[in-house]
Image 1 (tube, rainbow, N blue to C red):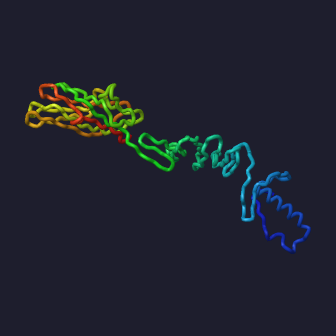
Image 2 (tube, helix red, strand yellow; image 1 turned 30 degrees about the vertical axis):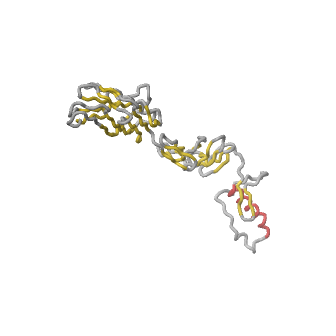
Length: 294
């Protein structure tokens, strides 16, 4: 007998000859061998199933030491449970070392324990399950996801002389905060630098105030924001009030698309005829440089 095979509970009939009994017993054995894949005339030392009073409790799989070999088959290979999808054997469960076991709908994946809180997601471009690594500005802890601002707020603790007609980069020697070493209060302290891996859209906001009077009514106050020492990002000006002995504030905010390692500077000038001081504790000059996203 071979597959297909069936067990017919209506045969033999009650009127059948008792002489058919041995034939029926052999036929039943063959059906069990064929249907359940039990090896014929072989001593089996371990049960394949464990039942309790309420039903099937366990399926016992021996270590075949190899993966599932044919479509639709399930097999234990050491600490892995594999299933064959018709193309190849896939890990249904894999518990070796620090690996996390996953079934991923057909491609198979084994993710090494990241030893950190992570989100798990489906990477459709790669066709696998993967861990999502929190980028700058996003953190995962336990069951919580939090966001944090990435940026810098820098100011001046003392005035800086701006020569009439000379465009001058404004220095900043103090910080309220700096999340990613964007600015240095001493070295190249005119610069605000995009950190590694954080290229994208940045918001640059500044307010500048002259601490000394403009003696010429209607003096032009220019400002210029540039990147990498050469590229103009923003340029504008205002005209001071048409009176003498006036002081002026000016500022703006804009968004620029910058690459990692790009640096941005604020430059100012005026045409009042003599040096004029910018920035002080009472008329604060500051820059806010904030990451918005890739």
